[in-house]
Image (tube, rainbow, N blue to C red):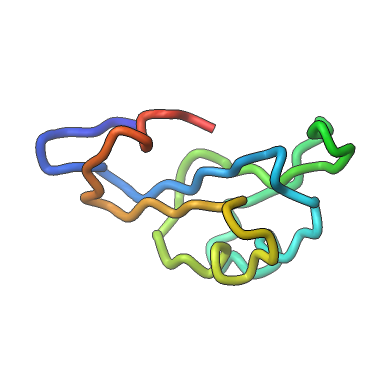
Length: 88
């Protein structure tokens, strides 16, 4: 994800895969359908949700739908910070 002096150039969703229980609520709730169930298993044995890498509008519906606190972070366009540099 590119970042310039103005901040993040487009919204981004970051999943903490080992927090995800694979319930699929975020996937079903995403209005632009940019989330998916990954084929790989996390350390808990679930198929975590993933982000396709483009198309997120930063609406935050996935964040609010997720029952696991801390599993999803949505970064809106213009965000300036260090944590967003981590792709995941």
